[in-house]
Image (cartoon, rainbow, N blue to C red; front, side, top):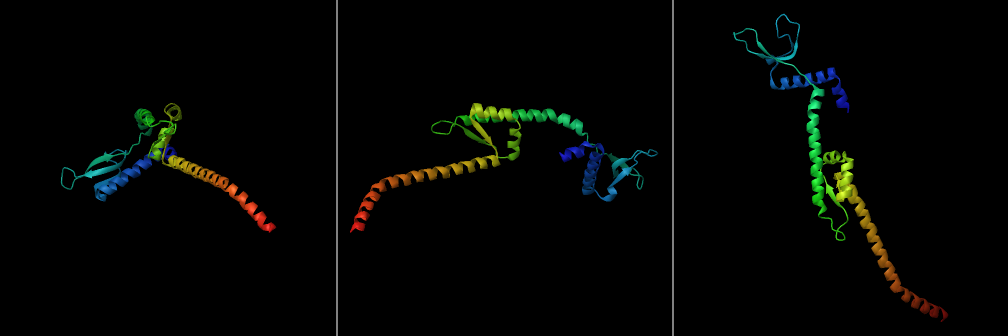
Length: 200
């Protein structure tokens, strides 16, 4: 958001582009091979941000400049990019729906749960898919497929782990009750023996 706001200001955007261009020129050329803020046309007050100095036709004559000006038409670029991005988003969601249908073949209650999980291995990909909440809800409702990214899958697995522990405790407690049930007559006869011992 901050970058977008910064690049929304035409002057700031121009300075940023100029700095970037200057850095590239500095990296690629020597100080004598380019100039900054050059009046390339004699008698004109117009100055170009950068100019590469090419050798003139005559030995020792004036250089021939290759003007380079940084421009950043962000608004036009954004408008140009929007249809492609929107098309890519639609294609992504179509692929997710197709894969959800394919995953659906693994759902076979009572042998499986009545839902499956589609794991998207990148958080960015998961975030992009989750922006389409109605489509994600439809996939969950119709295909019975839950979409998860790395962090949500980890949360899901931690929840399952807690369930496994609870189930293990319940099973153990059932075993303990069963053991106590079989030991109960023994405790009764032990109590009788203990009572007789006390009387003697």
